[in-house]
Image 1 (tube, one colour):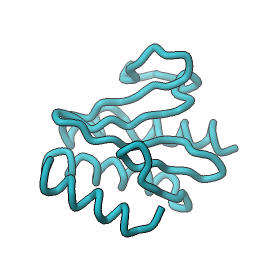
Image 2 (image 1 turned 30 degrees about the vertical axis):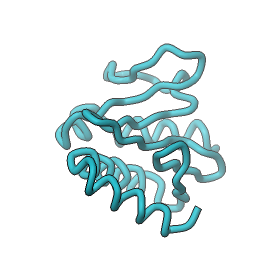
Image 3 (image 1 turned 120 degrees about the horizontal axis):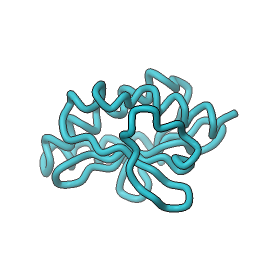
Length: 118
């Protein structure tokens, strides 16, 4: 996907969901800090990140932003913040900027990147 689609989704979020926009920006910044070479594209109404493989996505909802991990079942949930009980996927819900640190997002993203993009 082009940068134009990313820009458009960010613009739409800023207009329709300012809180979600702010949380999505923080999540995206965290992901880029962990995996600076990762690519980003708009997919499924959110932002998908890939390196050698797709390792996480950021999706804004009315009351939260969800960072989703396609192989979340393989992550060590040492802080007990992963949600979901499907076969593979897990996610972390961010309700505030403080949740980025409090829910140890950086560590979970690093795990997902290491497991998925070996």
